[in-house]
Length: 417
Ligand code: ADP
Ligand code: MG
Image (cartoon, rainbow, N blue to C red):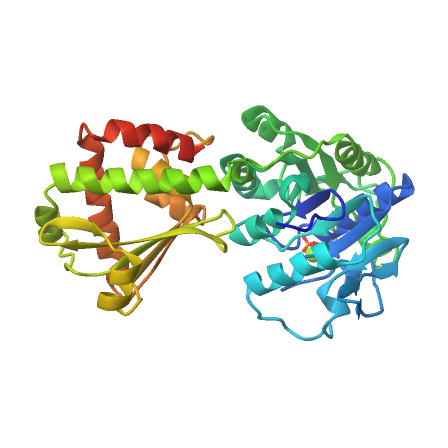
């Protein structure tokens, strides 16, 4: 990526919506501003953007000057949100990829003069977030995850998402925690008992603290003052401290050098074709899984954002053998088109083939894991998905058993990361 982000970035995420992500995001940004840092505040939430409408209402609209997007100056910060482009009453159903591209342009081509970018993410945790994080590359400081205690399982999922994808997690904030009624002195736990200590002990993460559910806070936000005060303010302070102390760290998935990856993929594929043709009963496998011969299958190796292509390899199975299709044959015999496209990252490909790769959550990396983590896609006619998976799975299982697999394995270990 030629352009660099203007400043290190922090994402405020939550596995669910309505848990206080935008409120906490705004408070973290304001806390950094109070410490004299110049802050860029971005709302990356497309379906329910309330950072710059409800929490820190911001008027104005974005201007473009000399191909540069000019963020709106408000609240002593530089702000961007979709509501500064499109009437906030209107629903937006564009594709998350499209929004990621817009955000990329805003970040990389915007006229920012900031020390930090604080970003309010869409609710949920998935490929959308990976795509957004990949915009920042080694300028990504880490995430702050907001959760309600009742949604312990979602908090765990968010933690494992970071671990499995090797994304830095600064820590978590427990919001809408139990509170003591000042009048009747009873404790209320609408959203469950605190699980902060449990999460810290079980997953070795940092929970910055618990912010109780508070009527006073809710009223204050509605009156236009979103600043969290009193004891819970210390939670926000800890978040700001962690951001200031954090050092940008290259997310693992960006670490390997593209060139080395490309040549390794080629070597591995050639090896696999050799082993398959020499040692595997391809004819038998095809009969077993009713795979049709002569189909053109494209393996498309993608960057972790699943957008940029690293390498494409076309293969076919015919007369009980596996063939790599050359560009000339692809044009002449297949009209330049594959019948099925399998998109995956070199890392996922290698991990699946190895069959013994363990994720930080302790589970083995299989097709399932690749699919679950958004590193595996199949495009083809309806009905091809299951059959193709079964056949490829069967083929891989057989290849893994062969003696010739040893050299391929070494390269795969490198690719697997
Ligand atoms: P999200 O961005 O996760 O959807 P918001 O930050 O918009 O959630 O919070 C939802 C609503 O709850 C907002 O009106 C916010 O002011 C309010 N809120 C958030 N945290 C608390 C809290 N601890 N006590 C009372 N109200 C809260
Ligand atoms: Mg929000």
